[in-house]
Image (tube, rainbow, N blue to C red):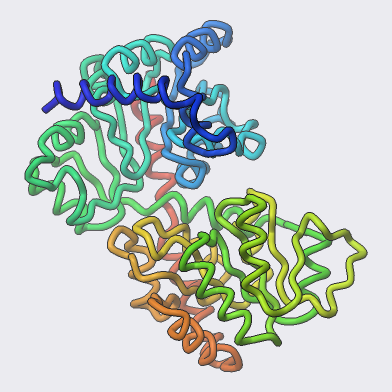
Length: 419
């Protein structure tokens, strides 16, 4: 199986080099392919030029969203001055948000494709003392090399579901990869039990550091003159990380059904096509944030479309109700960010990989919807029910408080293995 995996990895690398020139310049896939060109050579050059006088700690996240899980850990360790932090992403969107975390890390790279040669060269270049992977990033060759080199390696914030690849009958290669971790920090007892059944026993149940990160940001001051001028017109419903398909349909129908409510719509991806698509579906007056100033008159504006990235976690503070996108796919976005502000949150029905969303539904804080009618019914029952809103706010506050503390446990483990 490992031989087949390596063959596929090498073929994909060759294929990327072949098809890149044929893709549209603006596609995310093309950006991904382009960043892989001579990537390992660029990393070797960058690390050779870096004054690495401290032990290297390598963090790897699939995307910027997943990096936010580890962010309080990275911030603490970098601030201590004892570590040289190398951060890698699999998605180019992580590099695109560099301005938001550049003070927290020493080097940031895309992760070279997982071939045996590139994994070996990458580790030779960065020479990590320890490595931390996030959620479900278990790359076979990288983990094999880390194990061979006896480098302590951790997986944090893992949620192992019944559909996880290592649990499949054909998942032996990934079961072996999981055994390369020195310690796996999982989010619930069910995940630990599933791992122990396949022989992975170095497991501990620890809270998600994302709760610590989100609560830290929720407590920070944030002001935006344009948005505050808009929300002053009346109560606000925020729709965050909205995808173009079903998310957009249910949210725009809700806005059209409730013209007395202001809406902040934050697309997951921003392009002229998506922005036009949103505005065409709305009956009420809408504006794009980029078209506004501190003097813009919002009296007749029902919907403000946020056409910049990186502020969503702060924007939830302006709303009384929320909808989080991605739930019509297996990749629901962070519902914790909305819950941190003690507001009710709705989302699509695909929760099989998202135990936090499942818990929010069980607690009466969240609601899983399948149709625009279900979203409308949920919102209509909350809209003017102040006693129920107070109950939800109280439950959300207790839920967030009860899930903090994961950051300290992981920091202690990393520091205990420092040489």
